[in-house]
Image: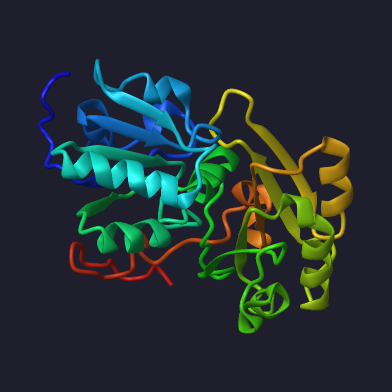
Length: 267
């Protein structure tokens, strides 16, 4: 095995949403240098993992429980090896990394988080959407619908949706009926735009545009039940690019900021 150029510790790496080119430069360097690669094989591109260095121990995490994963990572680091623990998207979003870090800390093992491109932003890119639109919405709520894993009472979807901003729902495609009902109960118009991106940036990426009232029916008809990002709100209206109605102050010729003196208004 080629000697690693990395410090012996666990690197929790965000691999991005699927496209192997969407891992960060740092994440790619760590993956290509690590002695041990432990990755979420059902979610991370095999093409990306194929870039691990020759002789690296490459392991799939889908069949392991938490303790097994931590035991492997801790044992490797204590032998002076570097470990790339590769997660899909950005590990800080529904990556279940806190529990790993807690046990690694108990084992006396160092770790570092390397951020990645989240599926929420990959989905927005696939849709050609800006999630924060001047004079329309300036807030994005990242959450998920309540399913087998509960959410805190104060974070029920109906309460969050009451802000009427852009909402991004992870892990919620199988709960589309509940999602639709919660949005409507929060006062959303039935024709509020919703966009669903399944497997964003993968070769088999699928995009569905619908509305709050049609969400459950359209997802069922499309056969989408998992691996999908749901984005809801008027920022997802595809007609926005046909109308020049929502300009920012940043590039307004009359707006002064630290890098430019604004011109006087013609009015």
